[in-house]
Length: 251
Image (cartoon, rainbow, N blue to C red; front, side, top):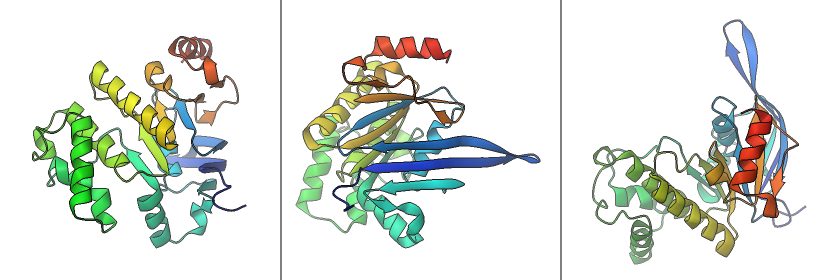
């Protein structure tokens, strides 16, 4: 199968163990799924269910205890560290729950960083940064440093940085968690437009049914296992039905 025919993401038999005192504890258990190109998948689960660990494994930030992750048809385990880092840089965008901004770079410089790392410069970079700063309401903060920002402002910078390089796969860890309701809805609408207009493949992990309702498909992660059912797709993806699933699952 060529890279163009491969799904954006393929996960097979993924496990992650963590040593606690004298025993190994399974944080993730036999996770398998595929993300077709252009699909927006939300994975829901309570705190401690393994959502952030799963996202780190999908993006190659951590190594699984067993199983395989393929991005664009490339098996991460089969790549050396240099090629794996290059794939992350070129093909994956991350929105972290706790921002991970570079503290001594301005807002403008943080947003531009993925393009600078790729060796891009000039007026086109400035214009793309300016457009995103306007989109996320950050023009007035453009020359401030992250410690001078509110939590909501830092998260908006993180989202802008993640999408400026137009990654093939966007991994978002609770991207609205530190935003006011209106700001959070604006970010999700923007991600939805990116998905609808540009075919962006997205995996969003969240505990918020309102956020998950922006996706094409919603699945549930409970005690480290990705459940086969319930699984919402198409017209079934709405906040009320997501709430009902959470009640049924008692989470």
